[in-house]
Amino acid sequence: MTIQSLGYVGIGAPDPAAWAEYARTVIGLAVEPGDPEGPVRHRLRMDQHPFRMWLTEADTGGVTVIGWEVRDGAAIDEMTVRLKEAGVDVAAGTEEECRDRQVTRMVHFGGPLGIRTELFCGRRLAPRQFVSPLGVDFVTGEQGLGHLVMKTPRVQEAVDFYCDVLGFRLSDTADYPWGTFYFLGCNPRHHSIAFIRSYKNEGTHHILCEVTTPEEVGRALDRTREHDVKLMATLGKHANDGMFSFYMTSPAGFGIEIGTGGVQVDEDTWVSRTYTADIWGHHPVP
Image 1: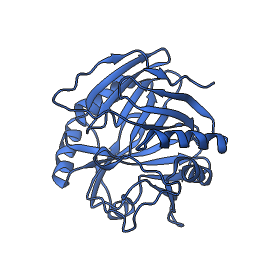
Image 2: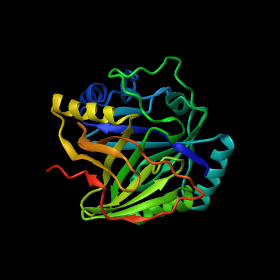
Image 3: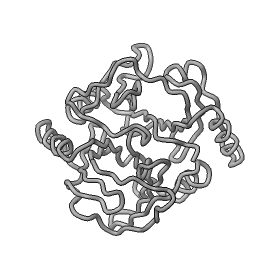
Image 4: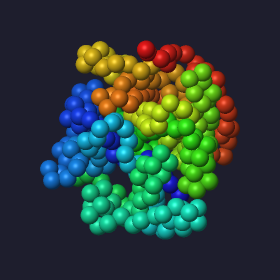
Protein backbone atom coordinates (compact mmCIF):
# COMPACT_ATOMS: atom_id res chain seq x y z
CA MET A 1 0.00 0.00 0.00
CA THR A 2 1.53 3.28 -1.16
CA ILE A 3 -1.05 5.58 0.44
CA GLN A 4 -0.52 5.60 4.20
CA SER A 5 -3.43 7.53 5.73
CA LEU A 6 -6.06 10.23 5.40
CA GLY A 7 -3.96 13.30 6.10
CA TYR A 8 -6.34 16.26 5.91
CA VAL A 9 -9.61 17.52 4.45
CA GLY A 10 -10.81 20.93 3.37
CA ILE A 11 -14.37 21.73 4.42
CA GLY A 12 -16.69 24.23 2.77
CA ALA A 13 -19.29 25.78 5.08
CA PRO A 14 -21.87 28.55 4.61
CA ASP A 15 -20.83 29.92 8.02
CA PRO A 16 -17.19 28.98 8.78
CA ALA A 17 -17.24 30.86 12.08
CA ALA A 18 -20.19 28.81 13.33
CA TRP A 19 -18.48 25.58 12.23
CA ALA A 20 -15.27 26.61 14.01
CA GLU A 21 -17.18 27.29 17.23
CA TYR A 22 -18.90 23.91 16.92
CA ALA A 23 -15.52 22.23 16.35
CA ARG A 24 -14.14 23.84 19.52
CA THR A 25 -17.10 23.53 21.90
CA VAL A 26 -18.67 20.23 20.79
CA ILE A 27 -15.98 18.11 19.09
CA GLY A 28 -13.02 19.45 21.08
CA LEU A 29 -10.74 20.44 18.21
CA ALA A 30 -8.25 23.28 18.58
CA VAL A 31 -9.17 26.18 16.30
CA GLU A 32 -6.51 28.45 14.81
CA PRO A 33 -7.00 31.42 12.48
CA GLY A 34 -6.48 31.10 8.76
CA ASP A 35 -4.66 33.50 6.44
CA PRO A 36 -6.49 36.87 6.57
CA GLU A 37 -5.68 37.42 2.89
CA GLY A 38 -6.59 33.89 1.74
CA PRO A 39 -9.76 31.78 1.49
CA VAL A 40 -9.04 29.67 4.59
CA ARG A 41 -10.99 31.09 7.55
CA HIS A 42 -9.94 28.59 10.23
CA ARG A 43 -7.61 25.60 10.64
CA LEU A 44 -8.52 22.77 13.00
CA ARG A 45 -6.05 20.63 14.95
CA MET A 46 -6.55 17.24 16.61
CA ASP A 47 -2.92 16.11 17.09
CA GLN A 48 0.64 17.21 16.33
CA HIS A 49 -0.09 17.87 12.68
CA PRO A 50 -0.36 21.59 11.94
CA PHE A 51 -4.01 21.01 11.02
CA ARG A 52 -6.22 18.12 9.99
CA MET A 53 -9.09 20.19 8.61
CA TRP A 54 -9.59 23.71 7.34
CA LEU A 55 -12.70 25.79 6.74
CA THR A 56 -13.57 27.93 3.72
CA GLU A 57 -16.80 29.72 2.91
CA ALA A 58 -19.12 27.90 0.49
CA ASP A 59 -22.78 28.02 -0.49
CA THR A 60 -23.29 24.40 0.55
CA GLY A 61 -21.48 22.36 3.18
CA GLY A 62 -19.15 19.48 2.46
CA VAL A 63 -15.62 18.27 1.87
CA THR A 64 -13.87 20.20 -0.91
CA VAL A 65 -10.34 18.73 -0.70
CA ILE A 66 -9.11 15.27 0.35
CA GLY A 67 -5.41 14.89 1.18
CA TRP A 68 -3.77 11.45 1.36
CA GLU A 69 -0.36 11.04 2.97
CA VAL A 70 2.20 8.83 1.21
CA ARG A 71 5.53 7.69 2.55
CA ASP A 72 7.96 9.74 0.38
CA GLY A 73 8.66 11.36 -2.97
CA ALA A 74 9.22 8.01 -4.66
CA ALA A 75 5.68 7.01 -3.68
CA ILE A 76 4.35 10.22 -5.23
CA ASP A 77 6.22 9.38 -8.43
CA GLU A 78 4.81 5.84 -8.41
CA MET A 79 1.25 7.05 -7.83
CA THR A 80 1.60 9.72 -10.52
CA VAL A 81 2.52 7.05 -13.08
CA ARG A 82 -0.44 4.89 -12.05
CA LEU A 83 -2.84 7.83 -12.26
CA LYS A 84 -1.62 8.89 -15.70
CA GLU A 85 -1.83 5.31 -16.98
CA ALA A 86 -5.48 5.37 -15.83
CA GLY A 87 -6.05 8.53 -17.88
CA VAL A 88 -6.11 10.93 -14.92
CA ASP A 89 -4.64 14.42 -15.32
CA VAL A 90 -2.15 15.01 -12.49
CA ALA A 91 -0.61 18.38 -11.59
CA ALA A 92 2.27 19.18 -9.26
CA GLY A 93 1.51 21.38 -6.28
CA THR A 94 3.11 24.81 -6.44
CA GLU A 95 5.54 26.07 -3.82
CA GLU A 96 2.76 28.25 -2.44
CA GLU A 97 0.35 25.30 -2.22
CA CYS A 98 2.93 23.11 -0.51
CA ARG A 99 3.72 25.89 1.94
CA ASP A 100 0.01 26.30 2.69
CA ARG A 101 -0.41 22.55 3.33
CA GLN A 102 2.92 22.50 5.20
CA VAL A 103 4.26 19.61 3.15
CA THR A 104 7.46 19.00 1.23
CA ARG A 105 5.77 17.85 -1.96
CA MET A 106 2.24 17.40 -3.28
CA VAL A 107 0.38 16.48 -6.46
CA HIS A 108 -3.34 16.87 -7.12
CA PHE A 109 -6.05 15.64 -9.47
CA GLY A 110 -9.82 15.49 -9.80
CA GLY A 111 -11.09 12.52 -7.80
CA PRO A 112 -14.53 10.91 -7.54
CA LEU A 113 -17.43 13.33 -7.04
CA GLY A 114 -15.27 16.00 -8.68
CA ILE A 115 -13.39 16.62 -5.42
CA ARG A 116 -9.82 17.85 -5.58
CA THR A 117 -7.67 14.99 -4.29
CA GLU A 118 -4.07 15.47 -3.14
CA LEU A 119 -1.18 13.12 -2.45
CA PHE A 120 1.52 14.58 -0.22
CA CYS A 121 4.67 13.69 1.69
CA GLY A 122 6.94 15.39 4.19
CA ARG A 123 4.32 16.92 6.48
CA ARG A 124 5.81 19.48 8.86
CA LEU A 125 4.61 18.86 12.40
CA ALA A 126 3.50 21.74 14.56
CA PRO A 127 6.04 23.26 16.97
CA ARG A 128 3.36 23.60 19.65
CA GLN A 129 1.85 20.66 21.52
CA PHE A 130 -1.77 19.93 20.65
CA VAL A 131 -4.12 20.77 23.52
CA SER A 132 -7.82 20.12 23.08
CA PRO A 133 -9.96 22.91 24.62
CA LEU A 134 -12.14 20.11 26.07
CA GLY A 135 -9.35 17.73 27.06
CA VAL A 136 -10.22 15.24 24.28
CA ASP A 137 -7.66 12.72 22.99
CA PHE A 138 -8.17 11.70 19.37
CA VAL A 139 -7.03 8.47 17.70
CA THR A 140 -4.83 9.47 14.77
CA GLY A 141 -1.15 8.49 14.28
CA GLU A 142 -0.61 5.92 11.54
CA GLN A 143 -4.39 5.69 11.10
CA GLY A 144 -4.74 9.31 9.99
CA LEU A 145 -7.37 11.82 11.00
CA GLY A 146 -10.33 9.41 10.95
CA HIS A 147 -12.56 8.43 8.06
CA LEU A 148 -14.68 10.10 5.43
CA VAL A 149 -17.96 8.79 3.95
CA MET A 150 -19.30 10.19 0.67
CA LYS A 151 -22.67 9.86 -1.11
CA THR A 152 -22.83 9.32 -4.86
CA PRO A 153 -25.06 7.67 -7.48
CA ARG A 154 -21.86 6.52 -9.25
CA VAL A 155 -20.64 4.46 -6.32
CA GLN A 156 -19.05 1.64 -8.31
CA GLU A 157 -16.92 4.10 -10.31
CA ALA A 158 -15.66 5.62 -7.06
CA VAL A 159 -14.93 2.24 -5.48
CA ASP A 160 -13.12 0.99 -8.59
CA PHE A 161 -11.00 4.14 -8.76
CA TYR A 162 -9.90 3.89 -5.13
CA CYS A 163 -9.21 0.14 -5.29
CA ASP A 164 -7.82 -0.29 -8.81
CA VAL A 165 -5.91 2.98 -9.18
CA LEU A 166 -5.11 4.19 -5.66
CA GLY A 167 -4.61 0.70 -4.23
CA PHE A 168 -7.15 0.64 -1.38
CA ARG A 169 -8.56 -2.62 -0.03
CA LEU A 170 -12.28 -3.34 0.20
CA SER A 171 -12.70 -3.97 3.93
CA ASP A 172 -16.43 -4.69 3.94
CA THR A 173 -19.77 -3.78 2.46
CA ALA A 174 -22.97 -3.05 4.35
CA ASP A 175 -26.39 -3.50 2.77
CA TYR A 176 -28.77 -1.46 4.92
CA PRO A 177 -32.39 -0.50 4.14
CA TRP A 178 -31.26 3.13 3.62
CA GLY A 179 -28.34 2.34 1.31
CA THR A 180 -25.37 0.16 0.45
CA PHE A 181 -21.97 1.16 1.84
CA TYR A 182 -18.53 0.21 0.53
CA PHE A 183 -15.73 0.58 3.13
CA LEU A 184 -12.18 1.09 1.85
CA GLY A 185 -8.97 0.97 3.89
CA CYS A 186 -5.30 1.83 3.47
CA ASN A 187 -3.89 1.13 6.97
CA PRO A 188 -4.98 -0.70 10.18
CA ARG A 189 -8.05 1.55 10.49
CA HIS A 190 -11.01 -0.45 9.18
CA HIS A 191 -11.80 2.22 6.59
CA SER A 192 -10.41 5.64 5.79
CA ILE A 193 -13.02 6.37 3.13
CA ALA A 194 -16.37 4.84 2.26
CA PHE A 195 -19.00 5.43 -0.40
CA ILE A 196 -22.76 5.03 -0.11
CA ARG A 197 -24.98 4.64 -3.13
CA SER A 198 -27.35 7.61 -3.22
CA TYR A 199 -29.69 8.42 -6.10
CA LYS A 200 -31.01 11.61 -4.47
CA ASN A 201 -27.86 13.68 -4.01
CA GLU A 202 -24.08 13.64 -4.01
CA GLY A 203 -21.67 14.93 -1.40
CA THR A 204 -20.44 14.40 2.13
CA HIS A 205 -22.27 12.00 4.43
CA HIS A 206 -20.00 12.24 7.49
CA ILE A 207 -16.51 12.49 8.93
CA LEU A 208 -15.36 10.33 11.85
CA CYS A 209 -13.43 11.81 14.76
CA GLU A 210 -12.33 8.82 16.84
CA VAL A 211 -11.67 9.33 20.56
CA THR A 212 -9.90 7.07 23.02
CA THR A 213 -12.61 6.02 25.51
CA PRO A 214 -16.37 5.40 25.77
CA GLU A 215 -16.47 8.15 28.39
CA GLU A 216 -15.28 10.64 25.75
CA VAL A 217 -18.11 9.52 23.48
CA GLY A 218 -20.60 10.00 26.31
CA ARG A 219 -19.29 13.46 27.16
CA ALA A 220 -19.54 14.47 23.50
CA LEU A 221 -23.13 13.22 23.45
CA ASP A 222 -23.84 15.37 26.51
CA ARG A 223 -22.39 18.38 24.69
CA THR A 224 -24.87 17.92 21.84
CA ARG A 225 -27.65 18.53 24.37
CA GLU A 226 -25.83 21.45 25.95
CA HIS A 227 -25.30 23.17 22.58
CA ASP A 228 -28.58 22.06 20.98
CA VAL A 229 -26.91 20.04 18.22
CA LYS A 230 -29.26 17.79 16.25
CA LEU A 231 -28.45 14.07 16.20
CA MET A 232 -28.38 12.10 12.91
CA ALA A 233 -28.29 8.68 14.57
CA THR A 234 -28.46 7.46 18.15
CA LEU A 235 -25.70 5.82 20.13
CA GLY A 236 -24.89 2.35 18.87
CA LYS A 237 -22.22 -0.16 17.86
CA HIS A 238 -21.34 -1.11 14.30
CA ALA A 239 -21.00 -4.79 13.40
CA ASN A 240 -18.25 -4.34 10.82
CA ASP A 241 -15.71 -1.98 12.40
CA GLY A 242 -16.86 -2.37 16.02
CA MET A 243 -17.17 1.40 16.50
CA PHE A 244 -19.17 2.53 19.57
CA SER A 245 -20.47 5.87 18.35
CA PHE A 246 -23.21 8.35 17.57
CA TYR A 247 -23.78 10.79 14.70
CA MET A 248 -24.65 14.47 14.85
CA THR A 249 -25.38 17.12 12.24
CA SER A 250 -22.67 19.74 11.83
CA PRO A 251 -23.50 23.40 11.10
CA ALA A 252 -22.69 22.73 7.43
CA GLY A 253 -25.37 20.04 7.17
CA PHE A 254 -23.25 16.89 6.88
CA GLY A 255 -22.59 14.52 9.77
CA ILE A 256 -19.85 14.07 12.33
CA GLU A 257 -19.42 10.67 13.95
CA ILE A 258 -17.85 10.54 17.40
CA GLY A 259 -16.75 7.02 18.25
CA THR A 260 -14.25 4.75 19.95
CA GLY A 261 -13.02 1.17 19.81
CA GLY A 262 -12.65 0.70 16.07
CA VAL A 263 -11.17 -2.67 15.08
CA GLN A 264 -7.66 -2.95 13.67
CA VAL A 265 -7.31 -4.74 10.34
CA ASP A 266 -4.60 -7.35 9.84
CA GLU A 267 -4.09 -7.46 6.07
CA ASP A 268 -2.88 -11.07 6.21
CA THR A 269 -5.94 -12.50 7.93
CA TRP A 270 -8.80 -10.06 7.24
CA VAL A 271 -11.90 -11.44 5.51
CA SER A 272 -14.26 -9.05 3.73
CA ARG A 273 -17.95 -9.61 4.47
CA THR A 274 -21.32 -8.00 3.79
CA TYR A 275 -23.28 -6.78 6.82
CA THR A 276 -27.02 -6.12 6.99
CA ALA A 277 -27.43 -4.60 10.47
CA ASP A 278 -25.52 -3.05 13.34
CA ILE A 279 -25.04 -4.86 16.65
CA TRP A 280 -27.35 -2.36 18.34
CA GLY A 281 -28.44 1.26 18.15
CA HIS A 282 -27.54 3.82 15.47
CA HIS A 283 -31.21 4.44 14.84
CA PRO A 284 -31.85 7.35 12.45
CA VAL A 285 -33.14 10.51 14.11
CA PRO A 286 -35.86 12.18 12.01
